[in-house]
Length: 251
Image 1 (tube, rainbow, N blue to C red):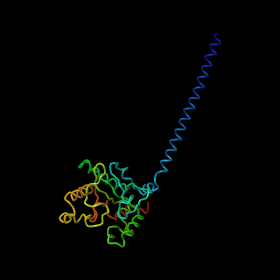
Image 2 (cartoon, rainbow, N blue to C red; image 1 turned 30 degrees about the vertical axis):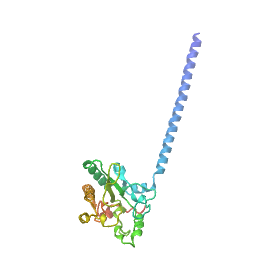
Image 3 (cartoon, helix red, strand yellow; image 1 turned 180 degrees about the horizontal axis):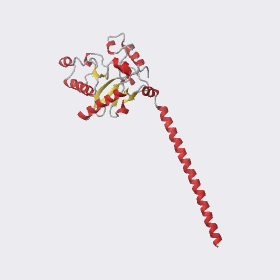
Image 4 (spheres, rainbow, N blue to C red; image 1 turned 90 degrees about the vertical axis):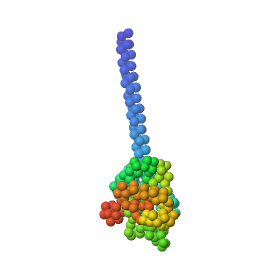
């Protein structure tokens, strides 16, 4: 009887070992499969990243929403809602700037949200390739609007990721009233003539105050405005940009 009892115990131990080994192998299979699935997901995600993102990353630029996710972005040249009436940024709808310029923009956003809760910056254009600059120039070069677009030979600060076009919006990214739409070619978009425009009734007091707020916010972060476009701000001079940053040839 004792002999059979020992055999029974040994059989149980053997069965336990075999079942344990099978379970371990099954667990390893699951872990291995999970690793393969994760790897496949990573590969798919990587393959969906537009090549333009890699290009801009390699040039030292950064997606401004990676720098500050609270900043709104509605790239006008990724739509037909611009002066050309064409989509100029195909398969691209993100705003990139040089890293130090993006830091400046984030500083402006923080200042705005700290002092004027409920408002946000809304970016219309940032880094722009020279190829797109040429398309824009071709649209205006033989018209009276040619002064609103920099020639490709001269280049624009946008072509270095050192300029940004933007407005102020509410928390739902609905723009506040600046008196004209973005890309408006005419004196109503002028910054220098705002007192005159107000006196002539072309702009209202509220519209002028909204523009002044945008300038206050951007000046605080170190940006500079230009006289003809209320939405355009430079981070530095064109000479400085040429010395510090690579030219963005194309997307």
